Image (cartoon, rainbow, N blue to C red; front, side, top):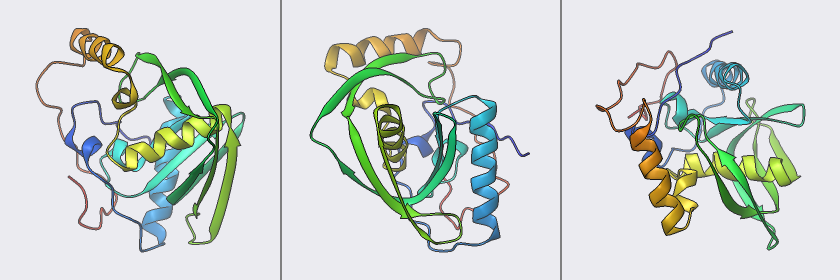
Length: 181
């Protein structure tokens, strides 16, 4: 088990667009394992590579007893929406109602480079959209309306982890293929 520190809101890697994975090797499989171990330990419903400081298009999820991962996701969303509470391991302790598509079909690859499709509604759809947003440098509070976002930023400043000095950047134990920030 290799539990890694999770990057907190304010870390620049969380705002960068992650690069597509092009090499499906042992290092990538180790990254997926570390993401999974860290997510389950946190505990969380999902975790993206940027949250461990690695700017690659990889995330893991654990929803309704199913654990999986997706690499280089491409999403198709339903028109029907859902609105419900959402949180993030990079914004510990904060939750806000966030609008998302009710359903998703996500196509991508597994850690061996095999094509996979993940379909889901409700929490799984929310999780896949949330983690894919991380890969695009979007944090869920960016999706809040103006008043909610203002309240979220105020709450962040009032936490013991927000509003302080810039976060300490830790060196990843994984090859970042030159994409760590």
